[in-house]
Structure formats: structure tokens, C-alpha cells
Image 1 (cartoon, rainbow, N blue to C red):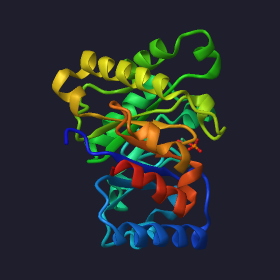
Image 2: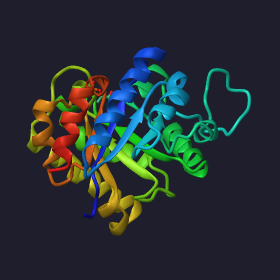
Image 3: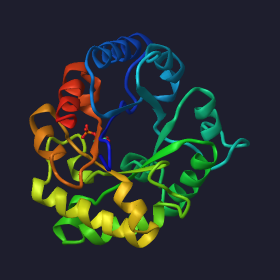
Image 4: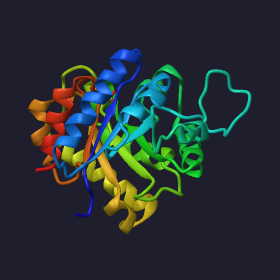
Length: 252
Ligand code: PEP
């Protein structure tokens, strides 16, 4: 298999200790029960990383942060460095999620700097891109995604250290999704942008996840698309049965 599917959960700013550990333990138990032919990643809030790490022991589920600063340490109050994530046992971090781009004014350049720092710290990155509803209505989706690939993905990216997540902003947490044909068209265009940026061999091996209202009911169709290599899941990753039901569609 050229690209093994990745099923990633983004818990966002949800769960206190008990809820988070209960959820992680339940997911770990389910993943241990069956032989899933996909990779798993869970990205809890920073406050739960150590606790969740313990719950995932003995499983193949990777742990990730939801963001990381571009500096290794220093005067950046409230921020977390990629080395700190690695120190806690993370192997991944999400970067450039649309909520970070909106709430914290993160530009492609900042996302790119963060990715370089994360890779240097030994982390793999899930770099998020996607268009707003207005941009889609104006027919700019592909151009926006190509520009985000060009600006947010560093030159040092490889298929091993980088995953792309295409998340149409208007589909996140709304229950709306693009048609399967639209998703495939955008993913294929993203892969072409990766060819331009990183070369054919790397682009062919780099995983491109779809994110935005992925649920058990639409996972089979989305995950069967030729350029969809997994899912970044928000709301449904907080429900163990939904998260696992989605993963079952990745192994078919
Ligand atoms: C996300 O925030 O990355 C996401 C895809 O959320 P949801 O699945 O809730 O749309």
C-alpha cells in the first residue's frame, strides 16, 4: 500500500481529566480488540497529554498536540514548544488548523515556520488547509489550497514527517460536507501542488486527510476516494463508537 490511511482525532478544547482519560481508555480498548489496517492519532488539549499518553500505552495509537510554537524555548507566554511536545511523548502535532488561523491570526508563513521547528524536534506535522465558504462560492477553492500548500508546507517536508489535512472551513463542525466528487477534485489538486513543491515521489507518498463533519454515515464514501488517505475528525472523535466506526471504513 502506497499510503496507509491515518485516522486522527482532534479533541480541540474539550475534556477535563476524567472525561479525557475515560475516552482515551475506551478508544485504546477498542483499537486493541481488532486488527485495524490504518494508523491512529489522538490530539487532546495540552493539559491532557501526559494522562492520555498513559492510557495509550501498549497500543499503536500515536499522540499529538494541536499546535506548537516555532521557537524551541523562551519568552512566549502561554505557548508550547515542539520540544515540549516531544518530551511528553508526542510524535505528531497539528499545525495551521483554521481555528488557529482565525483565532490567532496564523499566516501560511507562521505555519511554515512552526512546521520547520516541529520537524527539527522530531515531530510529524498535520498541516491544515482549506477554503472559506465565500472563497468556495467565488470558485477560488483550488487556488486557495494551492497557495496554502505553497506557503505553509516547508521545503524539508517528506512523506514521513508531513501529513496534509484538507478541511473546508465551512464544513468544520457544521454537518455540511462537499460532495465526494468535489473532495476528490480538491485532493487531486492538492497532490499536484505537492508535486510542484516537493516532487513526484514525495507527493505520491504523502497522506492527504479530509476533515470537516466526518461521521460514521459519510466515512465510507469519503475514505474510498483515491486521493483521500484518512480523516481528521473533530466532533465525532469525542464519541468512542463514532470514532471507531469511522476507522472501520479506513481499513476496508
Ligand atoms: C476539525 O476541527 O478538524 C474538524 C474536522 O471538526 P469536525 O469533525 O467537528 O467538523
